[in-house]
Every structure is written in structure tokens, then in C-alpha cells.
Image 1: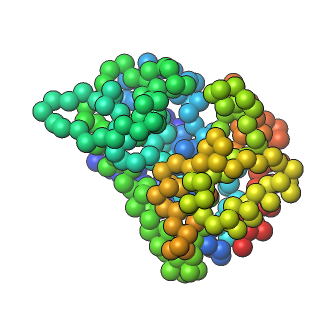
Image 2: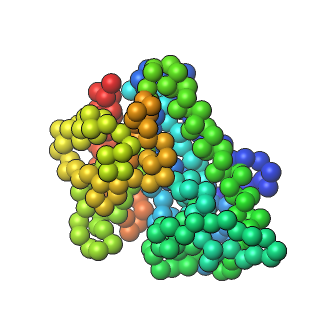
Length: 280
């Protein structure tokens, strides 16, 4: 984890790995694993770092650290998701979080915004307010310019380059999920989301599901997570671009209460390497 300052005018570029060694049309997208928490943000938050970190997809980037070894390329958003969430539409701004002067706000109140987890999250765990006071619209726009646009520009260019080189592109949008749904039931080891059959081919989804089950994991499809903005926005199978959201159950590799790795972490990492190393 890092706590760093952010210059007002410098974009926060995503980290790209494996572009030079890419040997298969596979991109691993890691939008929620960032560990950069700006000091100003921490000062403005009502919550301590321990609570804020519960929104991280903890160490998912490290689970996929070997992506370049099996010929994929990865894109990693380095800043904390709780500061800005790139897996949202840019219009998913929570009006309850913004104080307006003479400005007008263009926003879209989706179910995610209503639940406090829009472009800039307002709540942790559905009920804990993050901020001591509302944000200015200028601050919201600053974060969009600094971090949101650079991430999606880089991902768009990466997709185009992959399609140009290989004729197609497959994206795994990698996340972690709590061991239990908010309704209380235990979740599968992995949940695969294809936006209910829209964002990728049955063959791609089936290959990943079969690989996971061959490693002994349980798999669910689209329940309770069918795919977020990345899946819905970039998945165009008819144009050769397939996106599959992959949610990893945190109980497999981490202590959720302590936000620490379990000893089995390396075993899970090696399973993922075998699965995606065979995916051609």
C-alpha cells in the first residue's frame, strides 16, 4: 500500500505490463486493486484507512502478476477505487456528494449511485459515509481528468492494438468479492459475468469456467455479479472484442477482517496461471 500526494495537473497513468511480450490476444484489466490513497483524501474522510481499504480488490493484481509470462498484457489502475472508480460510467456522479455553486451537474442516478458506490463512492459497506463534507464539482472534474480519462484512453488503445495484431481481443476484468453476499448467503469461489450473454461468446466463458472447475473451484455465472461498466461498454463480440468479468471470492486467498494474505495465496495464484496460460 502507498499513500502519496497527487499533483493538481499531472494525470495518473495506468500501469501497463507485457505490451512488448504479448503473444495472445488477452488483456487482464485491474481497475479496483489500486493502493494509492492521497493524503488530502484521507484528511477529508470520516473513516480510517482500515475501513477505506475494505473497498479494494485486495492483491488481485498480484494474483495476476504472471500475466506477462503466459503472453497476456495487463492494465492496472494504481489509485484507490474509493477515491475514483474507473469501472463506472463517467455520468454516475452522486448528487448527494457534490455541492454546487452556479454550476449545473450532469449526472445519472443508477442503482450503484443510489447505493453510494458511484464514480466517486459516498459510502463504505452501504451505510458508512466516507466524507466529512461534500466535494466541489471542480474536485470531481479534477479526478476525472487526472485518472478516469487516462485509464480508459489507455484501455481503448490497448484493445485497438491487440485487435490490429491478432484480429481479436479478449479481456478478463478481474475483481474480488466478499465471501458472503449482502443477503447473507455464501458465494461461489468465482463468479463470471458476461452481462447476461452480451459481452462475450459462450466459448470464451465456457473455457474459463471449465479451467476453474478443473482446478477444483466452484463457479457461478452472472449471479450475483453480471458485469460492470468495463464489461458492458467494451464487450462487442460481433466486432471481435470479448469481455468477461471475473470475481474471485476473497475467502480463497485472504483474511477479510485483517486485509492480509493467507498462506494459500500462492496456490491460488498458480491455479490462475495454469488456467490462463492454457487459454489460447
